[in-house]
Length: 163
Image 1 (cartoon, rainbow, N blue to C red):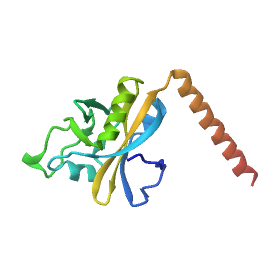
Image 2 (cartoon, one colour):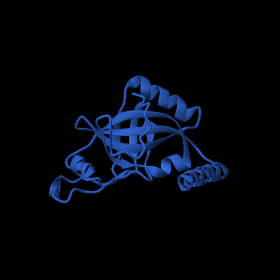
Image 3 (tube, helix red, strand yellow):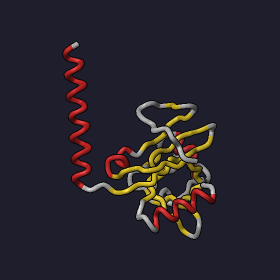
Image 4 (cartoon, rainbow, N blue to C red):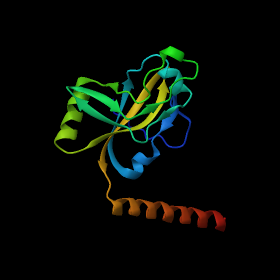
């Protein structure tokens, strides 16, 4: 399902508990669409994610043989997991509907988009991932965004100081 809300700042939003976010994603990419998907997890990975022991920074997703896989996302081994822990960087399958996968195949192969993990959160006890359909930013785009943020901060600071 396409998620219409953009999560900003709050810890919980409409029954969701945000566990991890990828702050660099919006800095490095233009996010055109956002999909909500499940993750196929094994053993103690859920407990580790609930403790916030997940790193999305270098992660990405790819479509292989009609399935979407999450790669380079590090989920630290659970401290009390002993033999049930799995490889922290293993490839994990993402759970999406067929029509969503078909859309992603078209976007990634024809239009040159990337699939970037945006955030991981709990929704009704299930671990969900926000997957962004993204286009890469050029250096001048990044500078332009930073300049806009800086100008907005200055305006807010001036408004606060006058009142």
